[in-house]
Length: 555
Image 1: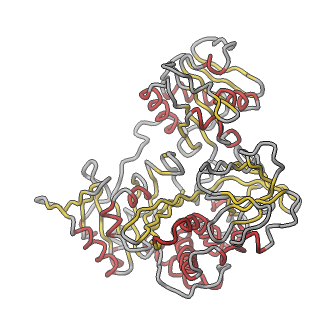
Image 2: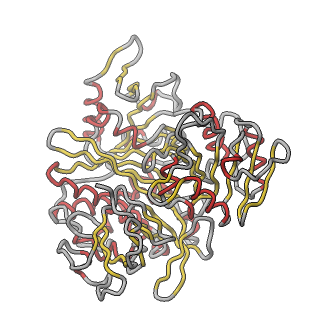
Image 3: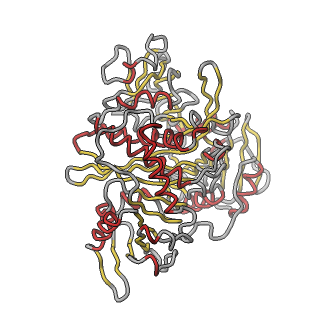
């Protein structure tokens, strides 16, 4: 999904920035990923090739100007100006037009001008209304949604469901231990949310009737039909049936050795809400709910109003996106090896969906370290062009992975979050578009991904939490075999090639461009040190596939 970046740093009033960001998130829902960024991010991050619009709010200088400060080799001003001249689009509000080019003189209260190959949009008001911004963006052919009142939906009930009555009862009992009773209901006050327990699904509505309280409805297998209308966007019976079917065929269809151990099961207990804040926040910000959930518990949502990505990115998620977070406990002693979970989650999507829908095989790929891309016939805004076997191929983002962690005693509680576009072809493509010969459902995708993730975590434990058993599958799925790359913190150094992932700590392995080692060499995926190789940490790096650029993480 192409980005809309809103500048936020010293001199930008908080209220103005919040208002503009909120308006843009409403206009760009389903079409663009709206993020706020600092001058330092604009100066050093590889944002320009995946960004459709940069927004400059009205700036009131209050001291040293971060806009013109040089970070490393560039300033934010230089990077944005270069982006603009190469064909980008910048929206300037209030007096911020002068911060882009002092020679530009606005003609009227709003308009559009050409600078280099790009376009500058401006509006004289520091906070124009949504209709004015919508009109301006449309003049630059930026896809937006019409302004609509009440576009942020209200949260709905959370349905806790399982085919195992003991599993469901244990979770509810753990929550009940923290109950505060009122005259009519049982409440659990958690760190981020308040839960209202409703243990009989036959006597509850689907919507919340109290502000800032989420009703938790317990659903046993014999009650799936009772709540079918409230869960029509994610049919519980269809999901559990798909999970059972995927498990039955996983050993034959998944390209790694079947697990020896069976200590972990994914998706046997689930929570589903049509609308909630975030599946990730539900678990990692609510210790009472987290403590009540057994390993493998998975939270699903049709729509998130505070969906989370890497860094501070938050958005209202589009319809048709399968969104979930799964609880994966790991021993504390594995330390940095927990980074492999984002790789395993990506493999679960690629090979789980491939097992459920064979015609998708090879079309969903992994962009290191935690993005999912789909092969499309023609280039799009923000698409990647990769040359494989002499053939140019185009890929667009279809999903992403986020892993957060909470420590409990000697256990590392990892929460593996994922969003993958199943049914909505906007703004790039979706699984349904890749699989035209079969009926795609979110329930079948979810069951297949859970079965694959379960197998992956079991094999990961069998292998003492190393990546060796998955090297071949990951190499076949990722986009980077022998692709050129530069270390941007070593300007002038010859280009290198990406050849693998180290099996001990999950580092991206690069070698000199002319080195004989290739991605097909097992040593590229081993833990053994390789002369001339530079192994790069996945978290905290700046990595731009279009420019083949990677920055080593700062110490």
